[in-house]
Length: 102
Image (cartoon, rainbow, N blue to C red):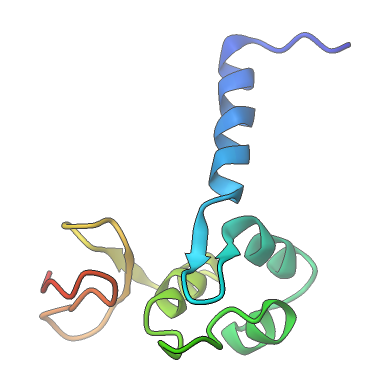
């Protein structure tokens, strides 16, 4: 059995928690599923959507789209009210999750 330092153990525990965080609220798709699709070669939002169904729910990717695009390396900002991802663009930026202007 491998002995991990406290920092390594905490980092591994946080990675597991992060993998279970929801990305697509409509379809209940978690961050780990999206990360696996990206690691398997999905390079665009459309490729991730085809592999995971993320962005195919009733909101039409209004909520999950910015988060997935951020995971793909596109420029995003973070909502100062709820912490959700917002695609960068002309100000004011409106959060797709809470509706607040940032």
